[in-house]
Length: 173
Image: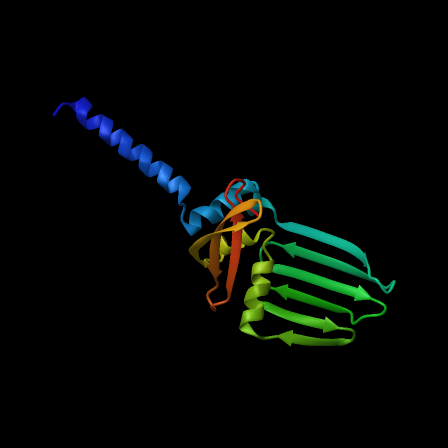
């Protein structure tokens, strides 16, 4: 058998294998594609703080102020302030958390709540799944109207499961 007779089938096999992998990515590859489509690991690794504030007006005319802050992948703060509703602020800092409602401060000790707050420290949940070592499992693809999606189950160390859908064309949803 000549080298040419051997090389052509080998190249064909490599091409088919690469195409199959592209059409049937693993859960980790889907998550990485979502991270890459949002700027990549380097962008998220260098983004040490994010802040979101909003003022919402409800149907009854009341307004609620909302503030969310994230810092250094280990600090998270969310506050809801209103004159007509219960004010609450949740603060997470390096594995410890409290919730403040009006004038009372209550430590948060539930491990699953603390684990969820730790994930919320990340600007991108996909990046958080990767950095926190979530178990990622590829599920059956799903179609939403105009979106053909990959489905990934993300499972935390404590067993909290979240189903995520990713557009096959854009990498995120």
